[in-house]
Length: 185
Picture 1 (cartoon, one colour):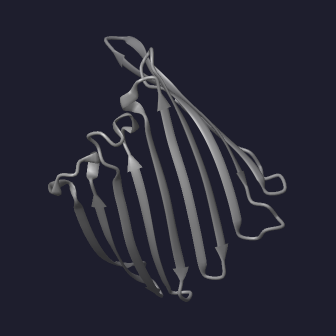
Picture 2 (tube, one colour):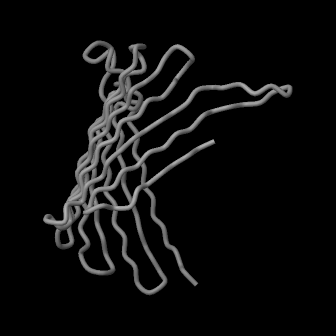
Picture 3 (cartoon, helix red, strand yellow):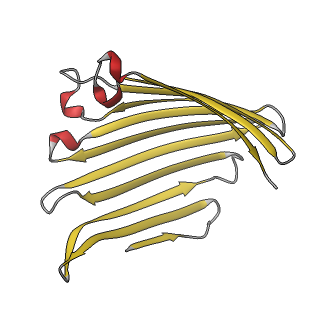
């Protein structure tokens, strides 16, 4: 029930689209739950090596009477061992509680061919209709590192999430750590 299309690149320009219809069947009857359609463009200009810019718009039929319009924009630039990225997203609906927005950025550095480190942050407001009133913006940040030698990789990350779900209660501040050792045979 999902159709996607990615065009060939024309001088660094690529078009993308997707369409999905959600159905469920019960007692031999098929019900249409809604649909999702998106369109996007990604540009990697040949005159600026390492730069990629993208924009996408989508419409989600959340219910039979409500649709949510989504927009996102991103820019990514890779130079030397560094890769920098920035993205914004906004969802608008006639139902106030379905409006949200986020801003994210990240940077990674390939120290050498074996080791990479990265850091990123995201600010997310799940319900912009209550901004400044009873909700607070969620703030996420994370650091990761990995080292590969032959078929072995050791990697780890540390993440911190403040005001999860827009709540300022101390119990909604989360931290996570993960370390992994993998072998490829």
